Amino acid sequence: MSKNLLILGGSGALGSEIITLFKNKGWKTISIDFRDNTKSDISISITSTNASELHRVEEILKSTNTKADTIVCAAGGWVGGNAADEGYLGSVQKMIDMNLYSAFGTAFLGSKFLNENGLLVLTGANAALQPTSFMIAYGATKAATHHLIKSLAQPDSGLPNNSTTVGILPITLDTPINRTAMPNSNFDDWTPLSDIANKLYEWSSIPESRPTGGSLLSIITKNKVTTYTPQ
Ligand code: NAD
Image (cartoon, rainbow, N blue to C red; front, side, top):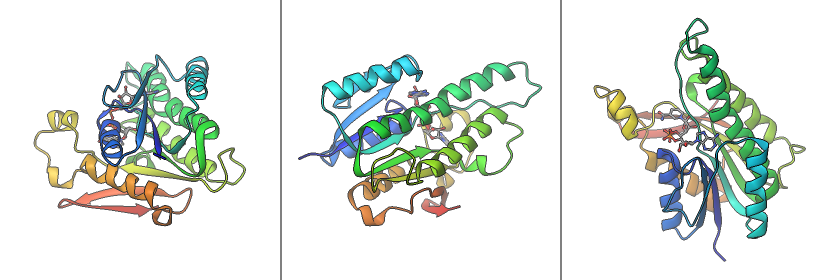
């Protein structure tokens, strides 16, 4: 029987890459995002990660008898700026919606649809291990995601028995948007999306290869070599 990948943010740069790789490996993929991912076996388009939209997703997944072996949150967004910025309050709301509600929503879906022995992966950010005064809302919502990851790894978190929750903390992903925004950077120190997709596939298909539950893994790429270092 084929295995299933459920991914929130499946239309983004990282999410699409993960979907393509898992599909190539014979997994069935379910993408949930604001935009459809037409390459995914199932694509559910949502308007928000509020309670009513998540319950709608829950009904769709229940009615199709869908469970997942791996659930990933690759959703998120970035806004810079400090507390004195004109757009500060708007950016706080945006970062809560994109980074935090997506992570909480993924945890909700994990509690309902992750199989026993399954893998749940949430995406934090390496930068949020330290204060981030120049991108206050982004850093705070990613730091809260790190806390959520550790809480979900506790035995009474509501996730299924023997499942594993880990956090991946990228620095800079090698995406088309980043290349356009920072054209003079050293791309050899950016993390190729395929590196992360392959690592998630390894953890998904070989349970013994998974990091300890609750791990926050800094993804560091230097000279085209990527390492996953627990914090
Ligand atoms: P991306 O912007 O290409 O894709 C993010 C996707 O998430 C988009 O398709 C967007 O529609 C979707 N999304 C946003 N909020 C959502 C929500 N609440 N519910 C459902 N879908 C939602 O981002 P990316 O570059 O692929 O980054 C993937 C993850 O890695 C994100 O969590 C991001 O914060 C994190 N990250 C990225 C970088 C980087 O350099 N790009 C660095 C550190 C961390």
